[in-house]
Length: 290
Length: 289
Image 1 (cartoon, helix red, strand yellow):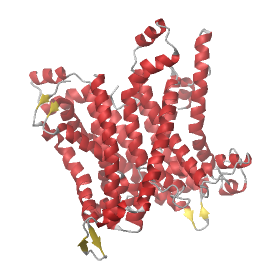
Image 2 (spheres, chains in turn brown, red):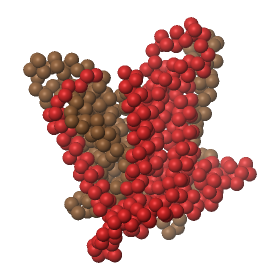
Image 3 (tube, one colour):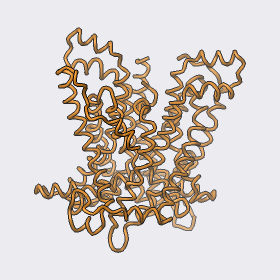
Image 4 (tube, rainbow over the protein chains, first blue to last red):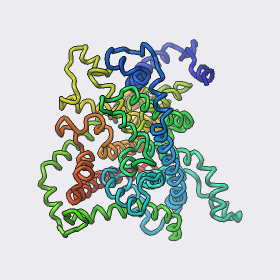
């Protein structure tokens, strides 16, 4: 891990042969980007800093970096099942949601990108309206719906609830990518005797693989960061890490060190996912419409 | 692309329909149901007609929350869109720094929303936070739990921190799609930097920028977790946005009728504004292709 990062971040930004005008341009760019990235990273650094301190140090002295770095806060979390099961729960429902969302969105996006049918435009906008629905509106009805069908406090309940905003988004993204694939490919495949399911899985899906990746990334992202619905629909067995973090507010005040450590650990899965999709991020955020 | 008329395409849409019907239509019907009924507990409901809506339209609480919400969305759009474009224009052209910038910029987007709140809570506190401590050391009075203006500034800066990257990444994707020939032509015509931006870059970014504005508007209008963690809606009601107020009403006080009426109005406002954005966006799409 360490040697690959060293390879990727060389010390010199500009080759020495570059002429002066180019260099001046890069400098003003570099200033803006550096300022922006520092603005982004400072609060995260502060969280990391706090997570490595003891509570005594946090509350009694103000230091820019931990004077005696300690991993005790992380140890608290990683040794207590009540803590780390939160991460497991979150990951379970996030993965379930991603799989369900992409699986149902694929055929629908294909229909929207290839065929015109009665009410297609209205249907598409209606789907999008679900992306616009405030989770706060759905919190109470979801609570009652999932309680009445006996799914309360299960992973699948949260996964299904998150489909509310992830399925429309997945359809939207995939439709954008599918529009970029020429229709002649479909027609040729049908002439060659491919049935629809075989064509879809064998030929079409590989063509839009990056689109599927992007859609999965977005589903993962929005399911991972959501708290209101996942907190409302769970109590013990499927409680997400984000909700468990409120545990740090005890009788003796807030346990800042553990809170910060838990926060840092929630950033890790996201950072890993970003690292894997870094080359598709820009196009992905444009939802395939560039 | 020309689309083939085919009514059987409905079968392909069917799974999505069933799923969304289960997770959206049924709950929404519950809400509509509650909004026209009154209850005295014990699962007994009485027809209340439009009483709740009438009450809501005359309630200062709702109008105040709506006003705060609109102000908040307007401010963050006014900051995040220009700032996002500026960052996108200053992205490195090529090399490993592109990847480094992309990864670092995306990081805030994947942090759970309550952790975003926690980060800013820790960052802004006067006793333990870098920001609060520094401001105090500079002699600036800053306390986001007591002072309304400070609370607003904190919540807005937090949202800018959290979401500007989304706008920047979208704008960057738009810029990437401009062929070099356009810039060369502009150079031959000796176009100024501003003219290159105004007549080449901005029109090419318009499509993705509309997506950015639509997404940012929708999400800022539904914002709940981040301000709730940082300020809890306070001081007083100063940062109680629509979602915070609604959750207080529905899950805190269990006022089903008023909360349901509130939900419906809330949803309708979002739908209306989003519909306008969406129509503009699809028209731009058509013009583009």
